[in-house]
View 1 (cartoon, rainbow, N blue to C red):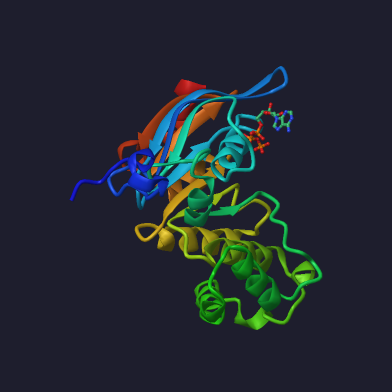
View 2 (tube, rainbow, N blue to C red):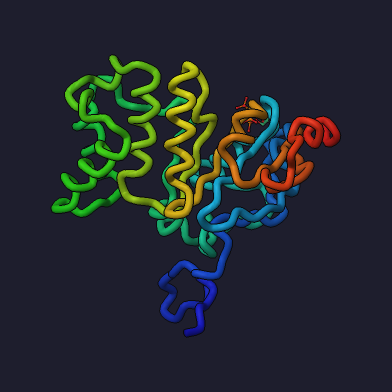
Length: 250
Ligand SMILES: Nc1ncnc2c1ncn2[C@@H]1O[C@H](COP(=O)(O)OP(=O)(O)OP(=O)(O)O)[C@@H](O)[C@H]1O
């Protein structure tokens, strides 16, 4: 079977390309007024891998994630998700992405179960599948003990798991996690790391961090960003001394 690029499908209906990278950025730039947040970023994330974006505060990590999630428009360049253009196929792209922003909005008055049901509807999960979709993420993220608790009353660890559960509710191929371990205690960090690792293969994960050891322990490959520029990409398995490599770049 020949798989066509998304914009070549007869009738204008977009389908993903099985041979395309999970995420591809080609010369992507983003400016906020006179601030250059991303400067001609080019990189590919492969299907099924955990890809870490490493960089200090202000290096452009959140901007890249918000562009992928369709919250921002690029100033220049091309971004695709599974071969689908983020601008032209935005709806299809959103179906394939689960996004957990750094401070995830959880609608604090809602109970966890209600919130997940609400998010399932919002993401277009068919009505008859909502209960099983909620049950699936509740089991996956071990949330059954807090199902009736208002999200605003959750501990930081449960809040982060609930945020991840809402991102997984429509079973997306790609997960985008902005600083997923930020603010967690050491035990919660270990649990979150194991959880993220367990998602690899079935899901592609793009996660950001400014903590070197965190990226090293979780990711398959890592990109270093500084001032909106990509300084390098490495496989973790081929980078025994990540710290030394990082220092040589920055
Ligand atoms: N809405 C905005 N308006 C103006 N400048 C912005 C805006 N959002 C981000 N910036 C600037 O763009 C640059 C990249 O910011 P971004 O938040 O993408 O970096 P980051 O690596 O995610 O940092 P952090 O870890 O602090 O979230 C920074 O200089 C930041 O000040």
